[in-house]
Structure formats: structure tokens, C-alpha cells
Amino acid sequence: MKVLKDDFEKPKYSFFARFLHWCFVIIFAYGIYKQVDDINQLDDISFFRTEIIFASVFLLFLIFRFFYMTKTQKTSIPEDTPKSQKFAAKIVHLSMYICLAGIAISGLLIGYFFSLGFRDELLMNIIVGTHEFFVSIIYWLISFHVIAAIYHRLKNDGVWSSMVPIWKERKINREKSQ
View 1: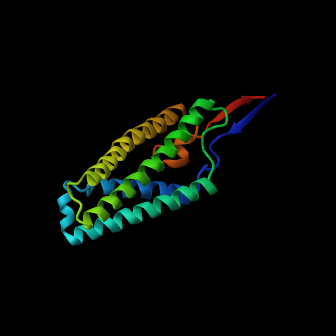
View 2: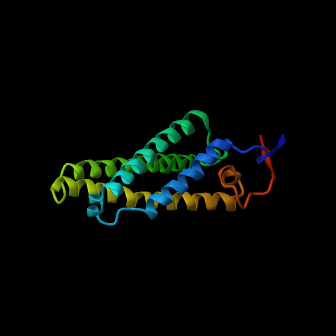
View 3: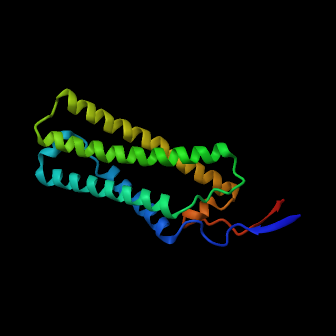
């Protein structure tokens, strides 16, 4: 028996989930734009305070978004997607949360130890190195995330339209055999 299924009737994610996603993209982009180029910039107390507030808000927003998404939203990946792709999506998403939290936490640790007078010490070098590691990894993860989104847009399976507000996929009827 064949059943026609309209895959694009309702967005898989709530308006609030999509809002959080795109707000977070903007906040992250702003963080990249205003990044600290030299640790000695933290000598400026106004700049230092702004960095601490930004990292704290970033981390709190990330934690809120993680719990909101995991407790209230379900994946938009179609059920017939291979298990390996579903697993890869989970790994990339979880790794993104871990790296983003790592960026904020290591940034706060840099600020904390800088305020205590640690500048060119081994501990500060380790924390800065950790921060830079998380930043490098997040660029790769974001690249994988964007490539996967484009893949799903080309596949026209509804994943793209569930989160992206532009270049919407057209409604299609796919035949499913049971």
C-alpha cells in the first residue's frame, strides 16, 4: 500500500527555536568580529568588563538554548535517513555545544587569571591554547553544519526549511511504500 505524505506542512522547529538559532548565529558572529587580538588589551578595564559580560551572557544563552532545544524540540531529519547520518548530526551538534561552551569558559578563565596577574605564565599559555583549540574546532564544526544544511536543501527533504528562513524548499509529496 502506498501513502502520500506531505513533508512540509508544519515547521519541525518552533518559531522560538528558529529565533534562538539565528540570534545565536548573530551573537557568535559578533564575538568573532570583536575578538581579542592581544591579551594585553585586557589592561583596559572597560574592555575587560565588556569581554567578561559578553562571555557570561554568551555562556548563559548557550546553556538556555541547549536545554530548550533538547527538552522541547525534535530533530527535523526524516525518519528514513540512514542511522550513520543521524549519528553524525548528533555528534556535530553536541560537539558544537561543547566547543562553544569551551570557548566561553576558557575566555572567562583567561580573564580571571589575567586579573590575578598571570600574563606570560605556563597556566595562562595553557588556557589561551585551549581557547584557541576550541575556536579552531568550532570553525570546522560550523563548516560541517553548513555543508550538511546545504546537502539537505539540495536533497529537498525539509531539513533546510525547518530552520532557515530563506530559499525555502517547495512543498512536495513523496510516495512512501509500506
